[in-house]
Length: 98
Image (tube, rainbow, N blue to C red; front, side):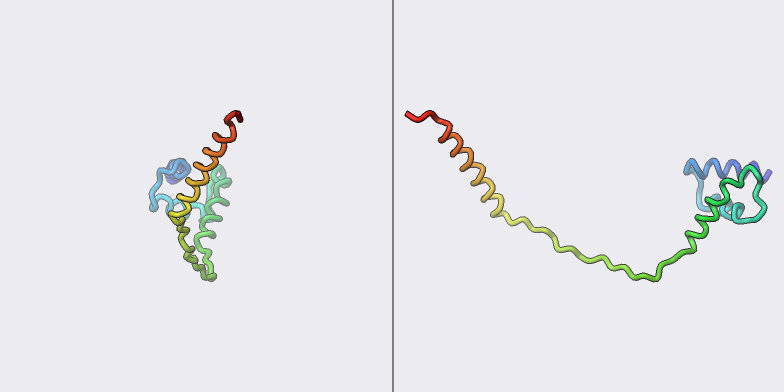
């Protein structure tokens, strides 16, 4: 009966359909030394995940505040003038000279 429950929980775990209590039951089962032979390939996964949960870092992280990029509105005017002057210049120089 226990193996049927573990098989169903394992299938639901890999489908992402388990809650925290069911996952805790799986972790408890696979961290125990008495794992069924057909479930032994899954044991390193749960042992590794249990070990990863216990890890912690002593390093302090700080997220620096990056200054916001401010595009000044006069740049838009300069860009627009450049586009207009290039357009007028190309129109003027493309006309046949008489």
